[in-house]
Image (spheres, rainbow, N blue to C red):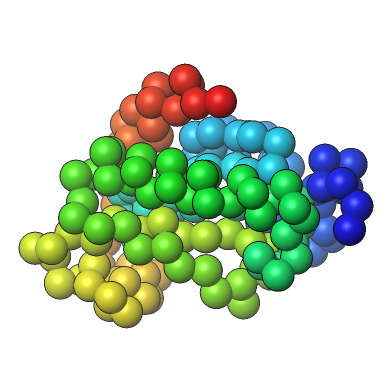
Length: 160
């Protein structure tokens, strides 16, 4: 496999690649960028404040396509991103879920799980997402998301 730093980031038609390259859009949700990884908040409307996304910077379908560098860096970024979700939201657990069907570009959902909110329990998070999309449940407050993104940027400014 070629060096991912030398491989084009974008794949025509990929929504995640398009988001990464739309500086106006990504600037609202980006939290931390590294050569191989991008940590961002879920775009609006977001199902929950604190629902973060860990994206591969290079267009790839999943871990089976990782370079050695991506494989080595994935665990630490996943741990840091999950810890950040917990710090920002006070949640009890953090779910890490990747399907890759809506966009075949690795984007891992880091979802806060609150013990007192049954809507965030196990596979019910998918129902929560569908309820928000259909309008039967309101999305996260955009102002709350903006505050959380600002706090996340402050906390991750020291990462390296």
